[in-house]
Image (cartoon, rainbow, N blue to C red; front, side, top):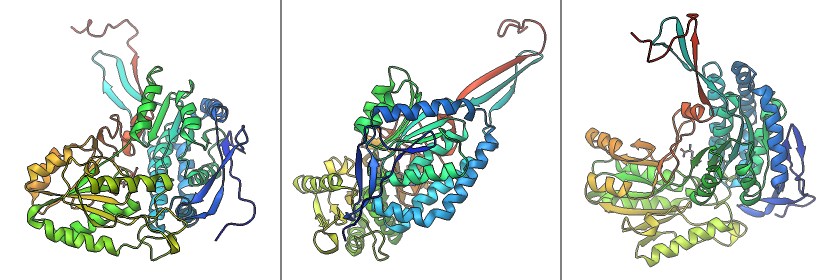
Length: 500
Ligand code: UN1
């Protein structure tokens, strides 16, 4: 049904005020399951808006960095409590703007809650080291110091979780934030701002500027007063960010693509492996950077696995994520749906066997959304484009392998290195795979998705640039070490020289 009446107009959040884009432009945020539903208008921000937000964050930093971390933590703790209370409303809004099924939207908000509580706890740690000096009457320690204004550019697939992964650690360390959320999902970031402010985070400490990459994101990246950029998104954008950060030697963390694999050995519990491949491949409509878009199955169980996997995929019901019977939501937008359809053609042309799916869902309840069938290609070779390139949709490429060695070679034979999984009941194989899979995350007898907030998240090779999100790794990224030597000997002591 078409939304009637004037659409709700959302604003940027700068220096504690809700403000329109200075250029006066706004863009529509529509439900990908039903494009007749307009969630609201959001500011199409430009350099001017970004500059205003950075100025506010720079000013606020002067005081925020001096607030004791346990006090900052109390605010985060209150924010987490508010998120718990609002979980249902925020989850429903997320399903409406992003399309993922409600249970998964709840998971996304839960991930934000987990991260916020976790980082609140860090407020009473933020540990450095103390260590003996090599000289007498001298004390040595290391402290973490905040860096300043952190620019954050986040994607649409985890509209609340990913901004929280970046914001909460940055804030607890004493930094201030300017967030540019995914263009398709600004509402969830709006909710985060609202929550943090109500929890007592002072004006200017968190700022939100919605808009697109070329206008808002690029302005944030290159702004001289933003020494830190944290980005999650495509490799193409990540490369541009790296180039923009290089001249000033900014700190930047990039979380990018994946072509994650599930390996199914001949000794695997096949029921479990099928469950994992369905959840890993089609959860979030395959729109996770951790999605299991490749499955390598030992030839001894290939036929049986594929039969069961295909049968289960056929039974998945696509639809509006708010309907309780829906297993899989739409693609995020038309561009993403077209990309999926193009890859289906590529797969067919390169000789993979289309086992199920392969088509856009149209008509009836699908007429107004960007729906695509759960799609499985069998008999893929590891070098096919559908087995090499990130599709970010409900398409899984299945390959046969003859040994663990071959599986590991296939697994590592892509440019990405985010997540990988092996199903086996053999402990030797499990540990060999753990050692030899060159990825940031490895799962044994579980799919490639489902990372927890207190463990490092990120990947090798073109998935990232060596940083990790979440866990203490995030604290490492959002602080710099300061090493302090206190000499209380009252005489000049020369390190490495007066060592006799
Ligand atoms: C992403 O797709 O960018 O591990 C993040 C997972 C989720 C996060 C995914 N906790 O699948």
